[in-house]
Length: 58
Image (cartoon, rainbow, N blue to C red; front, side, top):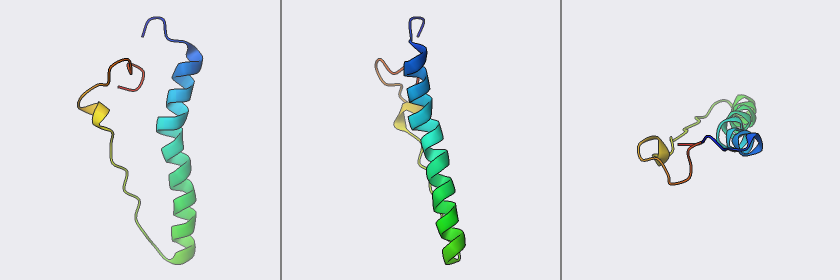
């Protein structure tokens, strides 16, 4: 973590946080258009068991 490049951190955030947000917005638009639906976001196993060399995400 101490030597992590800011670009690596930003990519991790973009994929693992912002990605879900933008997908949910687009899905929400479709659900509104079609009268409903559900978004189920299942958390990563890394929340329970951190991945090796994945300190940014885990």
